[in-house]
Image 1 (cartoon, helix red, strand yellow):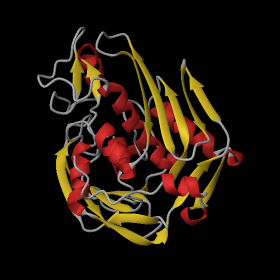
Image 2 (image 1 turned 90 degrees about the vertical axis):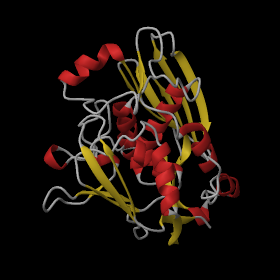
Image 3 (image 1 turned 180 degrees about the horizontal axis):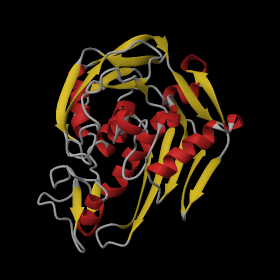
Image 4 (image 1 turned 120 degrees about the horizontal axis):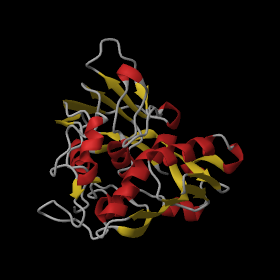
Length: 305
């Protein structure tokens, strides 16, 4: 049987927000079965806990935000993607600012943080969201679909008119090891020509070459270069995992995306939830043998990285 998972102990990290530029300390705590991923703003007296769900998403411009207004929590996607990637279902997160720290712009720092905390099983079986029928959303030439598949699979294509990106595609079959080695280290990226415009919008106040890939009109500006030749599309998959993790279950289904972003991902999740015939929730113990074998999540603590 595949059990729900949480952290073995408390762990914390301090960093700056990509868009807010504010220094923030984030503490992750173990949580009971069926808690889900829950955030609370400790810098606001009386702030209510905010469970990470697709329905609780507010704005999706350049990041995924939970909630609205003063108590909103911004840029949650990399942390949520890493929690999903490590098979962690239940976690209570205290944060003393408005935005999850960006760290190096990828999920790598969160992988190390979660390894430091360790993992323990909750004494309850996991439930999987199994896709039964195709669901599609499209907007402004960008689109995304869910289709049936025995495991989580993501087929992503991005297109940018830049000589270092052009068209990149990557097909990712989920496993914990594959997430660690192929996706977690891929960093967020942006273009030098957009910096002034984004700052006028109040964004990327904390952005730098230390926490993002930055491209001028011809090349990558980061002195160390890229971690993968196709790091850009791999990061898109990290974002996708973080956004669909808001469904609240581990997923057995294929996601195909074309030029997608946080808004498209959230629209896809909402449309799925509005189409009850397109999915079912299945206890791990009731999955078919093929699916059960494919979805076995190994203990990752000793996985090399």
